[in-house]
Every structure is written in structure tokens, then in C-alpha cells.
Image: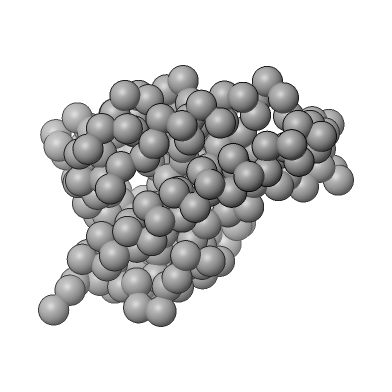
Length: 227
């Protein structure tokens, strides 16, 4: 199945009318579009199961609510203006590095994954692994196919190399990383094309070795290989 243009139309309207009053008046439209997105998410769970362990993972383990938590935010808009879901063994609350799918109009949709908000322990483990095995990471993220799909990394870096590492370290730029995240953006036309699900899964398979690398570093988790 593919995503509907009406889903993007609803999200465009929501961006302009992000109020509880408007949402209440259009609740039926939201529920219809959410139903379609949920059906697509459920299909994706099945597709991811070809190369990740999705045993026991259900829709509720992957999807996110549209309602924003505005308690500590200056932005008091009550609703997100996108639909999203994450896919991994155990679901989005497992803590594992996962495949994040973000659907937002006007070319803001993407598939992404990586070290986005690591704990201090995870960051220390990442830097230790880079110091020991940067070649393994570079082999993944500099692979021609990976670069053609995901391009350059996204994320913040330190200005100086972290304490404990030589200033002239051969992999200084990787050691400076506070985040290391990759994404591929999609046009609205691509989202609604019949082949989008196939394309998304193809791109996710390219991302898999990078997520496997991080999950091995952070959780000593072996890559899943379907028997």
C-alpha cells in the first residue's frame, strides 16, 4: 500500500490551524488519516521483519502520538504536524538504535537513524570504539552505496577533541562527535507513489549496518540475521 495525498493535505491544514478547537472540528478527518497511517505502519513491521527481529512488535510499540507535551516548551502548539513511527526489536521504547520514519508535507519526510541523543556512557563507549576500530565504522558510512543514499552525517560535534585523546588523532573528527545521525529525505510525490514502501525498506537495509554497529557498541548486541 502507499500513503494517501489526503494525509499530507490534513497535515498542511493542521500546521495552519494548530488549535484544539480546529482539531476537535476535524477529529473525524484525523482519525481517518491516522487509520491509513496505522495500516501502513503495520505493513512496515512485517517488511522490517525480513531483516530485523520484530517478534511480538505491534503497532502500539512503533507509533507516536500526535499530541505534544507542551509543559516545558515555549512552543505551545498542542499537536505535532507530522506522523511518525520507529522500528526495532522490542519497539520504540527498547532503547535500541532504531529506524525512525517521519512523514511531514513539503519535502520534510525522512528515514533516519543513529546516535541522536546518547547517554554519557554511550558516548564514552562510542569514542572508545572509534579509538579502537574507526576503520570498521568508516567502512560502513563511507561505502559508496551508503553515501549515495544517505549522504553526509548530521549532528553536533565538539570544537576540540575530548579529553584523553591525542589532539592529532587520525580519527579526531569522529571522536569529536556528540551526535552521528543519517537521514534520507523524500518528496511528497515519492511518499504517495506505489513503490514508496519498497523504496523505504530498500533504504533501511542500507542503514542497517550502521545501526548494527551502534547497537553492538552500546548493547553488545549481535546483528540479526533471519534464518
